Length: 220
Image (cartoon, rainbow, N blue to C red; front, side, top):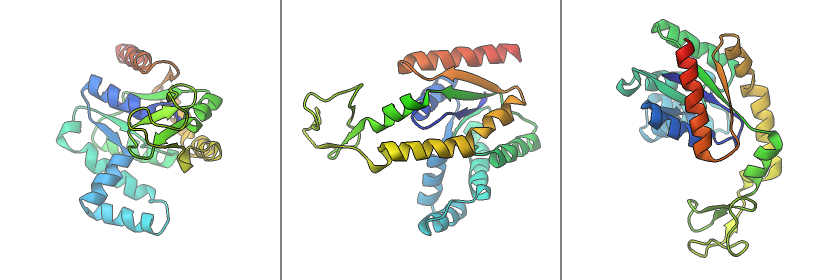
């Protein structure tokens, strides 16, 4: 299957992308991984992207699109992929359609993870990270440490990252609503959008998504 995964920050997109890609046996292609791989391997695209990033500028769509094209052309993606973080806007969605049409293939579904905005803010703003090991993550509501402000695992100090502050989260959501959310209407016009309730246990959300994708496949 060829799937695009969309959803606001805090909807669990990264977690579900990894799990769904494994279940569907397709590569998980995320924008973040594309940038890191190209920059670390010092590809021409990576050098170009880094020049923009070092200058504090956004990487142009054409660079992101070129990276995605290269990745989708690799052998493991021939029979399918799950795109996470791309396309990020309607221009990128149009470019993706053009790329796929050139190859005579098309998307099977656009999976839209839905989560109430206030719940998203609560999820992200409540996170606390261990200063000793960022893999140790707690939450002021959902996963409280035994002692406030102290990591249960190593005793390190728990802190809130700057990009997890409520103000920053609301800014990220506004960017999502302005730039990325319009692609949902773009794909709805093509009959591709499958909406999934993203709240609840991780396993339940994955099960919901797989069931919806199966129904979508059966209908086509």
